[in-house]
Length: 402
Image 1 (cartoon, rainbow, N blue to C red):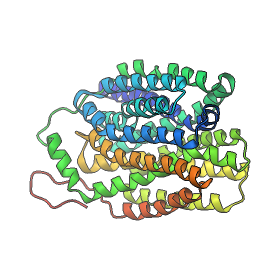
Image 2 (cartoon, rainbow, N blue to C red):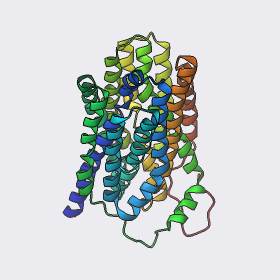
Image 3 (spheres, helix red, strand yellow):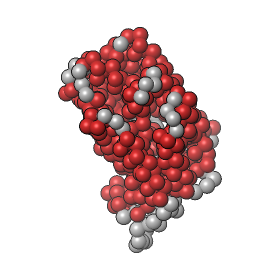
Image 4 (tube, rainbow, N blue to C red):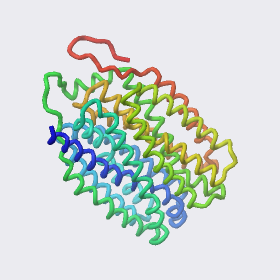
């Protein structure tokens, strides 16, 4: 028992460190939008398109990375993802063309993120801890991603101001390479064979015929749309309205800081209350917070309050969403099924970051995308209300679960 407890703790610590680095580095990309676009003569659409490709490929490759982690363990997947991530940052720092930006920030980092973030790591954690502790453990790892955002954003801004955007990205590549040794130590144990196990094809068919699974996917689309639009375009939105760039970086750091409490609390609550109802409340509150931010006079103070409120809601969806997948379908194919749900998150991320850049270049503002973020939040709240987290019944014919 002590050996199992130590193994669970080791998976939790190492997984948290990997997610801290991966998410902490990623959340600083919005700070590079203005200096790179200005120096290289791009419209914001070029930078936004590269990050949209990043989010799209991250999502498209996530189910495959998750399936590999379910089959062979998370260690190999994290090492491969960390190598791609570091190479992407390296070549991003050397990019001087739209194509180079798309291949580095878009393709390489997008593929790297699929092997170093939530679906792979949370799958390993879900297999390592007891079911009654699973939701809280996932909340702890998700909070680590928020801590990375809080801790690394000021450092990213400091590197940017000290070294310029190119050298700053090279330094970030060196930091990203730390994920390789961490991944090597992540000795995840794929689930042992059991009589109740089902094949990969059967698991996919089971999920495809489960109404709640698709509602969860659609809801996570909204999450991606909102958080990536805000994370990438908020600094530019504030800059356009005369707010100093330091306010934008501080606000993103506040989001990360308060999201530590938000994700941990969501994981804790998910072990005690219905996760779908909690998700409905989170999305509805997000819509309200964005509405109040846009209605209030814009100032550094109102922006900081917005950052604090959004931080409490930012990644709190992650442990609850993955917890529902684990509760309904079990942990055997958790990384792969969680990866499919996350694919929809990244489709939303693609739309949020790309539409933000496209409509800005066409109209000169972000008004339409802000309104879409509010409307989608209300829709997501309604979708989650109809999801059940009751486990599927296997071995007998059944109708699609709701």
